Length: 155
Length: 388
Image (tube, rainbow over all chains, first blue to last red; front, side):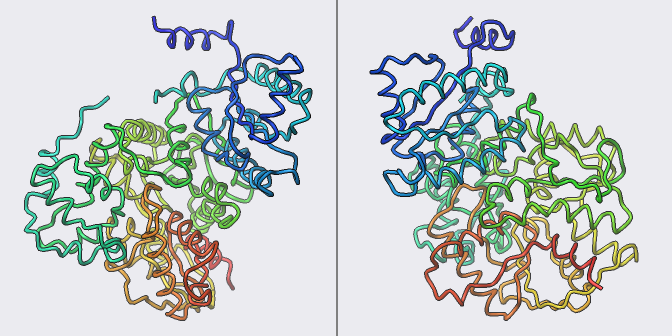
């Protein structure tokens, strides 16, 4: 049995299932916040896979849907606080886009709870670790992605 | 995975072999008139010469709008759009994809619907004043994705969310209580035209199964793309369907003639954009015009290019949103504005999204030349019901 198939079986049985979370972090604030959490040795769950983007405004609704399609159980989008954006208003755009994405996730039946938008600055290492812990627990309580492993489809 | 589409077979099936290279297709092609590098004739001619993975073809097959202007003009009845569909399916399997608009969001949404374990929540538009059933009935309303598109493009075309509600209002007024399916999935039009046949077949099987379970004899569509996909593609791939299909304009036109429905007053001047799927693909030209004639006070001013000569909205299956498309949208809106109408009506929610995109930001011409509102025909009919 391939590793993927095994992982799929585990996900189905619900035992030993671990949430698989994708976090998009902006380069200027949240990613630096993650760095700070690291150097300060704040512990947070290893379920979170960080993808660095230059700005939270870069995160398209498609990124969220695609991550869920490919088997993520939850998606986090982190950016600078409103007013602090390195590109002036990228995070405001992100806020608007993610509001729409949340609505779309509800209509699709995946549920907006699987996505979260959070502002984390470069000095908030503690908040970063806290958010990762909270969100992982939230996803753990929600259970595996309703689409199944790999979104029910490869590729 | 299915086998690669055999180009030789495709040439035979679509009649491409009959091409006499007259070039009429290119001369009428709306994309070619704005993009001199694009020519439908070249795509076919190259394929006939046995050149398969040619870079020009690779690029051009995604520029094609599949609006079937070429099909309608070809003296030898070559099925260009069918040919492009086959080429795209081939290309998709080889992994050659265009840069889709919205990063492919809409395609992903449709692929998600193909997943059987997904329980959608798609009837958010349903209010208590609407009479519908959710299990069995004679007439079924296939709502399409107007509600989802209204959500995605809420900042500029929020009213699309009203389309399914308006359709139910119209059907109720004609004394029909339609079935709406909570588990309905996308018709798969965009995936089919993107070449993703695997997901398309899943959606197709699911929809047919769901509709059969409701026992509906008649399925009414608001979206021209769903209508085309069911009537042409579904029946092509899975044989004759056991129910009658009709567009809402045909339904209203019939109901008005038979006296089951009376439309009220709406004193406005309209112009009508024949969307390619409803017009050239399904040949539904007269019912929308009959419906407008039945609305008291509504006046129809035709654009110079209407019916089978109607221009296209510039984007197909979210695969080719580019400069050419933008130019075509502006061109079409200028044409509509010139008629002096108060609004341009169309049935296709995608046309509405694309036109609203063209005028959303800066426009390359004087703003006053294109500032004509694009309105949804279904919503307009529902408004006319209430007009005294």
